Image 1 (spheres, rainbow over the protein chains, first blue to last red):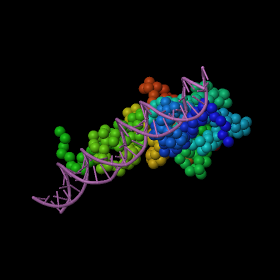
Image 2 (cartoon, helix red, strand yellow):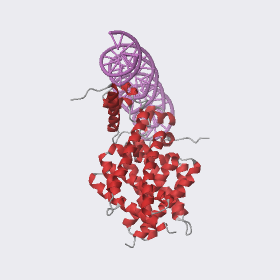
Image 3 (cartoon, rainbow over the protein chains, first blue to last red):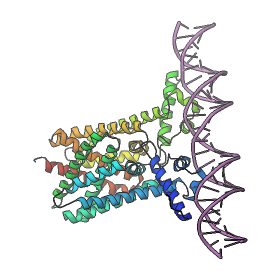
Length: 203
Length: 203
DNA sequence: AATTTCAGCGTACAAGTGTAAGCTAAATGT
DNA sequence: ACATTTAGCTTACACTTGTACGCTGAAATT
């Protein structure tokens, strides 16, 4: 039983259909730049030319997808921090949360990873912006928790995010039984960074 | 004055032309999968269909490029180790060497970076293989120099390589005056990892 | 009730793609 | 000397692509 839709509602609905269709297309074998307008339209159940009623071109849609993916990542961080209690390890909790996210939203994470080194300078810098947000929020948290300078926290945070993202890239292609190994590995590596910064601090 | 060429010589020459043309095409805006056979042929100065006399398809050429890029990286490592003297810092020397390489062979490094998260599973695992070589050689070096277990050396090496490659990605898009800042940053981050592992060792 | 707006459609076209088929001429093999 | 091989070419075909143009019908506005 579908409710009567106003014109605006209907438009937003198909817009969302396009976005969902695009995310669905962006599997292991498709990037934003290799994704064709017609393919998206086919998947969204609209005529190719109808696409233009919602987005200027595929680039425009792509920026929307990157923004949305970045937003999901930031929301994820908040949920991860909420899961960190007094006696739970911050690193373990964060890694587990991200690994969960990656597995449940493979294509969302893939977009960020792929376009980060993709063929569009615009996408690259958009993803870099999102990752910078990610790094900054972690940095603030670290600075507050570990009582270190902002400069040091920034360095630590960035190193950690790079390590985690690389592990995420591995996890995307790995078998499920390998993912646990990857998660354990990255936890050690993050611990090394943390220990190293702590060691460096007094100097 | 060109020497008289045998048939085989001539063939190898145009094969190399194709490879060079492909690397030249793979700039900031092109990936292996978005690279067309005709475009390569145009750049190599041959007819499109002549391409098939040398490679099965673009995938075949792509694997060749990845192999070649990986080989260059391994040669780079050797030259970096040669530059490390008793009183020069191993981290500084390695980072400076890599940054130099990246700037002088942008497209070579770009291929590895891009196809590492690209749309072809075959390329992805080929690049991963090359990076694993890279990590393994560094790991052996670390294990020998820092007298730590192989397991620990592997973890440290991988973390370092991930950090360095991420910095390389940044450097590719950065202005020349920013590259120094990136290099300094990554040196600190690598030092943190090294310190952290050293700290962890006794435990 | 009459008018305007506009999401979505169908058609059409130029440009680019991979690659099959067959030819040519020169280097090689006999 | 003649026969074979083959790198490179031209032509050709079937597809896919982005997008311009104009239509339609229903919702929104007046």
